Image 1: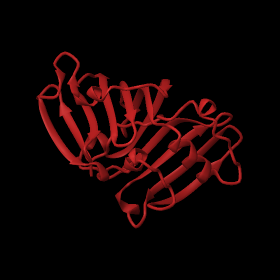
Image 2: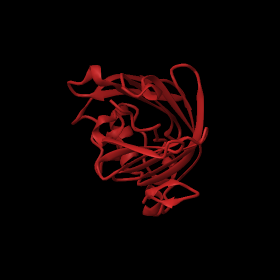
Image 3: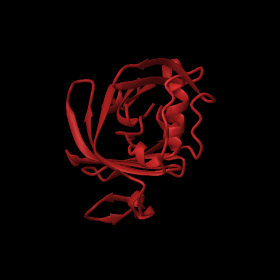
Image 4: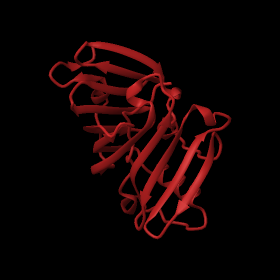
Length: 205
């Protein structure tokens, strides 16, 4: 099972601007409301794989159904979600592979309407003084992978996610952590961005 990342997603920062209020008695509900308030997002990311190796890049999100992970150090690949597919492009080999968007445990973040209770199972919620952490998996698919979203509070801000997966792709198998830096949200992201696999070559051919 391939993981869409590599991966996202925070996505969704600037809660204060979106006017979403926290309700301490319903952390899942407040998280769902927050995620639905975000339509565009981009940020730098740091990915840490199961071996502790780090990769760096830039993340783009345009809900619904568009996401891009542009790896820049090392600059060997890009992962794009669009048209209900996840496209992995190897810049060295100039090869593409495709999987279903719904093979990723993070695909729920791309939906037009995010419903965390309908299609997902909440495995744990940790609500501390400064941080909120929620771990999810797809209902009846606990063995297929899970994702933990970590938020800072006051205002509620997604700062990290961790994916646990048995992916066939070794780079996404095991535990993969994404930390987000320099976020920007609520702006326009041209649709052309999700067609570009190499900045030097322009759009997808």
